[in-house]
Length: 130
Image (cartoon, rainbow, N blue to C red; front, side, top):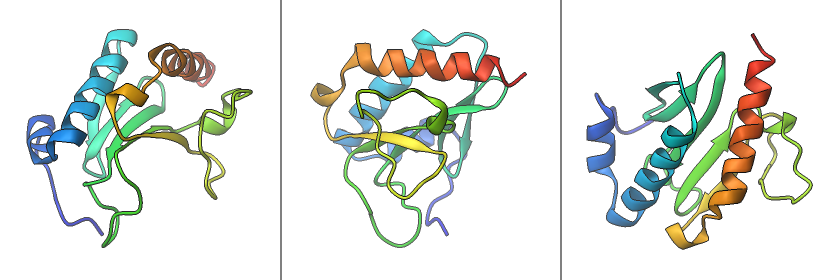
C-alpha cells in the first residue's frame, strides 16, 4: 500500500527531494523528447508512458511501494524489459520475469545514448503489440 496519492504530475514532482526531482525531470524530458503520440499518466503514483501498451516508467525511491525504501535514486523501468535485447547487461532484473530497470543516483550516471537506444528498442517492441 502506498502512503501518498498525487492528483497531478506537478504535485508528484513537488513531493520529491531535490536530488530525485532533478533526475526525474531529466528522465521525463528524455522520454518525452524521444517519443511521439504517447500517453503519460500517473499509475501507482509515478509516471508511466504508453502507446499501444505500457512502455516505461520513472519511479523515484521516495515514492514508496510498501513501508520502506528498497533502493536509492530513481528507477527507470521497462514494462516489457524481458523482450529488449540486453547484450550490455545494462538492465537489472532482480527476481522479475518481465519488468527490467536501471537505477540512477545522479544525472551524471545516465548514459543518454544507451538509455535512448533501449527506449527506441522498447518502442519497436510496442509497435509489434498492435
